[in-house]
Amino acid sequence: MLTRLMISCFCCLFMTSSFKSQTPLIQEPVHINTEIAFASDTQAPLWMEEILSKTNNNKTATKMIFKDIIDRHPLSLFLLGDVVSLGSSNRAWRNMDTYLNKCHDMCIPVYSALGNHEVMGTRKMGKKGQKKFQSHFPEHSHTGFVEIIDSVAVILLNSNFSTLTKTEDEAQVDWYKNILIKLDRDSAVEYIITGCHHSPYSNSKIVGSSKAVQQKFVMPFMRSKKSMLFLSGHSHAFEHFKKNGKDFLVIGGGGGLHQPLDTGPGGLKDLSPEYKPMFHYLTARRENGHLLITSYKLRDDFKGFMTGLVMNINHPEEE
Image 1: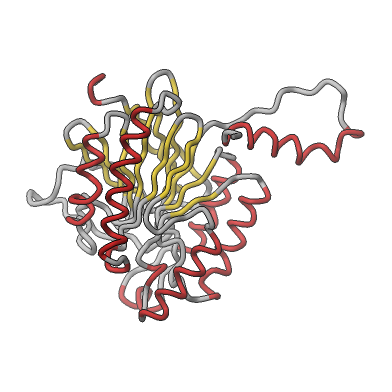
Image 2: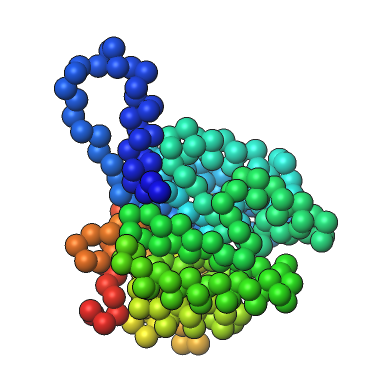
């Protein structure tokens, strides 16, 4: 089976093959970016949200995030849910279709977890939203799936537990436990990243922490020796927590309305108290025995992105 790196190389060569007669026989080697990109909560604000909260060119921010990611050309892009404002609405998908098509044209595979906005509304609307979501992300499984890119296994889970039957809920947890065991034993996998929409830990005054994610996903994650990083959204902010030596990042800065955080003594200890960009995305790259994590933030003047936070994540036993 071809790796994502090989597919990306083949894709780049295929895209340039039609210009052979116009290019010299000796060419510089194609540079392959080995980063994996992550973003969350790229949904446009709903009209009622715009009435209740202050907007800040949110749609423009999402457009710029996708452009910057596409220009960076990562091996893959993972979205952590709330891709659009209302999953059942054709209109809500209109701009996102443009961004996803551009990713496809540039041979950047895009995967996503379900968010609550994809299943929002009546039961009928929720089913319609899931159907539209599945058509956009055919590799998705509503009870969890994994992609391995450059020796990094990325697992995406469904934290919309109310949409799952009891059997599906139990099946997802069992699958997650078993796939972690399998990946821990797989010598071709060096690191594991888990992602879902709802944050197990967050100081957001709007959504807070998900106890269900803590109980169902965090416990197996903590037992896995190769599991390095747990990513989530739902909280429209950047937050960094550490539990028993393992890192939890909230990266909900894809374009949704910014959410206030509890910074008082009753809040969780956030390891990035000074880094609170309104709009941002993340990349991860395997490098010299660790994962290099970089958060890119949109400048306040909307004149491009800058490196906002860089961190090395090692296996807990190596720290």
